[in-house]
Amino acid sequence: EAGVAQSPRYKIIEKRQSVAFWCNPISGHATLYWYQQILGQGPKLLIQFQNNGVVDDSQLPKDRFSAERLKGVDSTLKIQPAKLEDSAVYLCASSSSGTSNEKLFFGSGTQLSVL
Amino acid sequence: AQSVTQPDIHITVSEGASLELRCNYSYGATPYLFWYVQSPGQGLQLLLKYFSGDTLVQGIKGFEAEFKRSQSSFNLRKPSVHWSDAAEYFCAVGGNTNAGKSTFGDGTTLTVKP
Image (cartoon, rainbow over all chains, first blue to last red; front, side, top):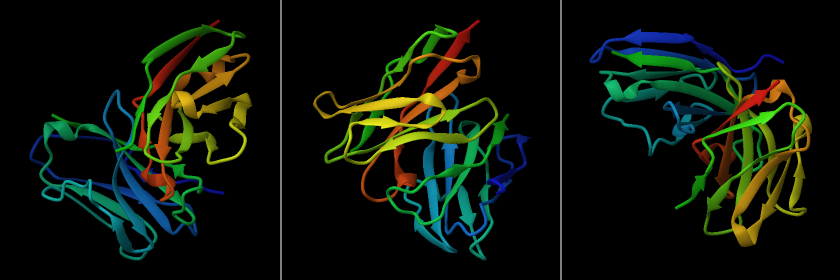
């Protein structure tokens, strides 16, 4: 089966610019997550979707970050305006059910550099 | 609050040698524990998980981990390391909500010497 697809693979922008990342989960997976992984750290959850609804966005910096999953399939994460500290890898993951014993499938991520 | 500590930032082992990666967690109830591997430029892949039952858990690629409640540890082991095991390894702890809300450690980078 096809895995979780993310694009672009790399992005370099200047601070105060905007950027968007795209994620297409595994077909049929209802739950989608976005994580931020800063160099030298583990992934940190930004937002969780169940179908096209937000389940948890408590860790999303909503003054500059936004995310949507309008049709309950693919998703976009946007940063506007970007700051230097947003430099990180942004990972998308999906699972079939969003339960405690589910298996997460991760994409390869988008590496963002903010100059 | 839940947390994970991986005390070793970087470990180097020779190919064929045994491996143990340490993970200590803090969680107020019975934890759900995970080990993931991340190869360069790749997403995370689940190696194994512990929810309940047998405290010795077998995973993919010949890895195993042992849950020790008294020590709040969930160390990852492999009896004989292969060069392809070189990667970053993350331990994660969660509860009975969902695996995606797990808290990850900062990872241990494994280098394998020929």
